[in-house]
Length: 384
Image (tube, rainbow, N blue to C red; front, side, top):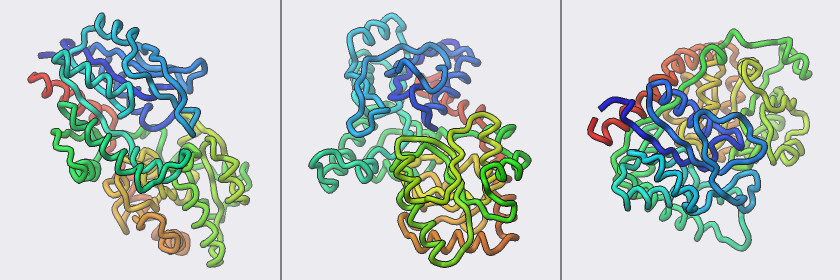
């Protein structure tokens, strides 16, 4: 079997209508598959004003807004128009990327028609209800229910793609026994590198050359740990540790976050080489999120030579070498975060050596080699 024999139907919960790390990984994957001659067709909810142009052929799936997070959509459970298009495409692999209605419908279709299926794990959905309480739902009831749904979803696929060993361990704890392959992520090293650092750009935001900029990078949404980030900066001020906060990104929680970090420099949404410049212009990346399965922002900061302080959680534990490229801290431990960040601020030599070590570690994060692992998994699945 050759790559040109593959006909892959990719079902995505968000392929391009809101920009995030998961859908950018999917678009890069599709671009790589197409370059190898694989036939790919993508099915996802869409919007009239997408965040970016899709890679490959994108088929619109009817959807509705997710409760409490209106910018995200849920695809309907396998609409007839989607089924008709899929039947005409005649895939020999169905790849699902999100455990929602559309993904469940796609797995059901695959099983009913004897089509090989593969599911990729992109985020810690079971943690989201800790940040978004919808109606009278009780977190003690909701999270076990979500875990049951996730176990069932990933257990129905023929094979899984997971970004890191820590995620493999997590899903095994859930009771998922489906065979799993690693699909790591890459970094655009032409964009994310220490040479992109710009003191002039920092000055334009009011950050002096001698000030230490603690960076937040990503969508401004609660599940990224914005509350912890704000609490830690308060703890740093209480300790008398001088610093500036540099926020790169936009999102629905921007105003909420701005009230809690009133002295922060908000650079807004950055793209392309401007994003690489912004990341390299940080002095420390602080990523307290526990929802990551890889942590694209972490790997990009490392590539840019920026030390990282992150939650000791999935994703980060596979990327950050504690005490070498940064520090891993128990999630939500405000004082421990402040201690770690304060040490990096107080020791310029440590800050420099951690940045250099992170840059060297990230050199191995390459998109082509990462996406080749997916193609290899497809071929294995079909016995090629």
